[in-house]
Image (cartoon, rainbow, N blue to C red; front, side):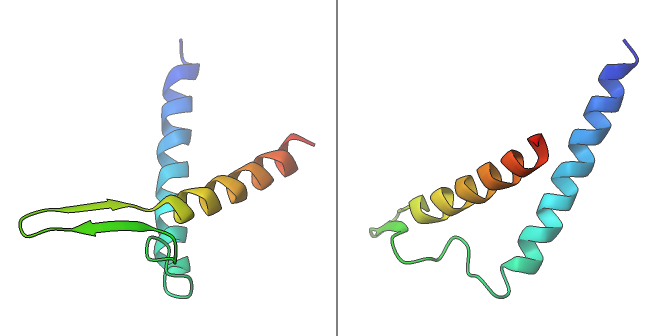
Length: 70
């Protein structure tokens, strides 16, 4: 049972690190505002789906995970 708190603390630290990296990287690479991200604006609403950003984040995460598995 003591391993669950350690896992939660590790996940929390990982999320903090990812958030800080996202803030630093977004200065040079406009994640969320890349060409191909879908934005529909109407009078009272906006629909936003960052599909290209999702693909890039997925590729980077896959590469990092494959490096750490070896």
